[in-house]
Image 1 (cartoon, helix red, strand yellow):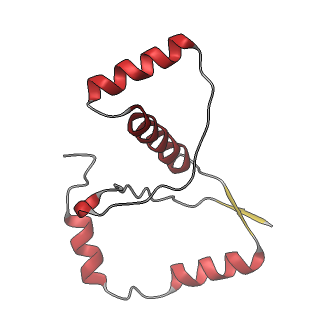
Image 2 (tube, rainbow, N blue to C red):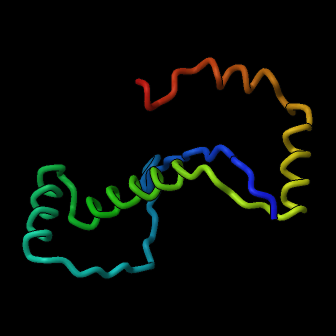
Image 3 (tube, rainbow, N blue to C red):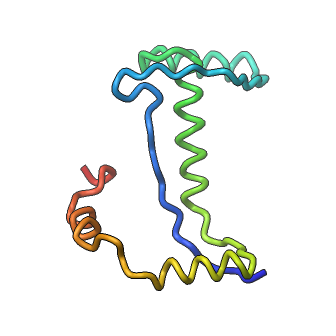
Length: 109
């Protein structure tokens, strides 16, 4: 295995983008103290969200941050070869990349 540093790209999404209904079929159970639950409920109400929506939003935001902060990845020899080949390959559409890089990122707005 070869250790390598790779940039992780954060991709944010919304479940209800463009009024698309998403069926949630998995559950996550957790235990809290009464004080923790009260704080979460108060914050959810202040945000105008249900407790579930508030917890999911906060948890997903933190999960994306943790993944974005990763700086060390380990690749097998085959994965490393594919990675290097992708880096060495010519850009399929350089003008699209120029256009993307000329935009102000959403986190700067």
